[in-house]
Length: 139
Image (cartoon, rainbow, N blue to C red; front, side):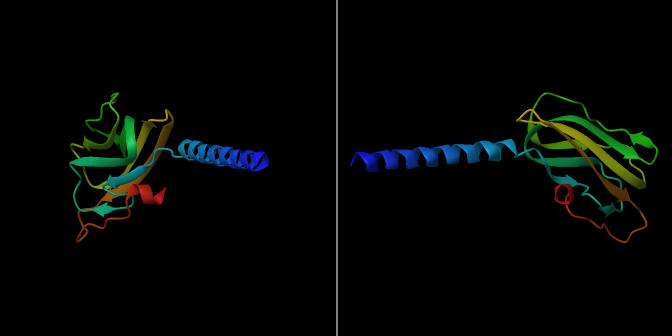
């Protein structure tokens, strides 16, 4: 009887330790990612957007947002703040036709900083907007 209790106790400890290790490793690798962006990565739109929407897979602090045209930075109303949110809307006054890259950096709840970028094009000559996949799907 004593041997079977010891075996059951050992097996229970092993299962608890394995579950804990799995939970810790899943949390360690669950970094922040851009889930969706509007305009989307690779999209071609007819008019310059009035704003850029970024949605992440969890609350983040948006540390940086640059909207780059060819050879110059476009003005935005971006201001870094300490409030963690899932979604951000950044106004983009004065957009014009051309190719644009959005460079962003965030800090996730785990304290890690993640930076990435995506691109879209404003082309008034297209018949209709051609929206690509959301930005999070391509990275």
